Image (cartoon, rainbow, N blue to C red; front, top):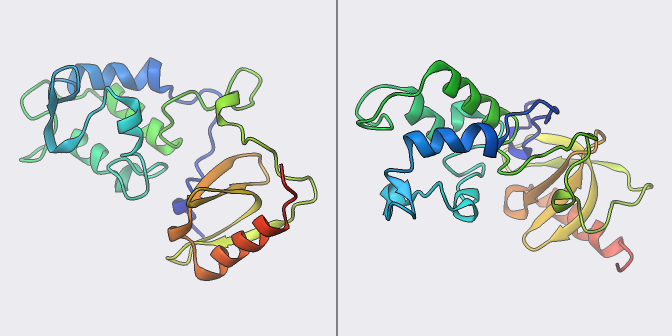
Amino acid sequence: MRPALFLLAAVPLAAADFRRDIRPILEKHCYECHSEKAKKEKAGYVFDNLKRFAGDIDPRGIVVPGEPERSRFFEVVTTAGDNQMPPNGPRLDAKDIKLLRTWIEEGAALEKAATASGLPPKSQLPSRPAPAESPLLDWTSTDGKTIQARFVRLKEDAVVIRKSNGQFFKVPLDRLSPASKEQASKAAAAEPPP
């Protein structure tokens, strides 16, 4: 079972850090054509506005968290040819490519996913934790991939779930099977008010 849809890449403490490792690569190789500061948004992509860039980090975006091979971004910065990026600048070296691969494999987080204590920063914690008695449930995607996780809450058009290892994931409802959507609705209805 390969549950890539749910972004199950574990985030170790020595993970590639966006600000320390990835942003400098983007500044050197990408900002000339893909930044608000340079007033260039080729193909509609901007990497210096993290809110906008975050919208492109998605199972349907140019960066597919956990899957460098499915990430169009990784493809164009690692291959030569008509579509290679950057088109005229220096190519990325092996170290930069390895950092990008690691960052994507680890979930493509734009802020540190773990602190020295091993806990996520407060900004990534759910507003209210899942109850201890919340059972592990099977969550199935529209393409048939299944993982086990505890229901945390419904948030906008997504369900927040927590794996037994403590990782939280926000999964768009339109990416869940009808049975898993119904399961999310029932779990939300059974939750006590905050």
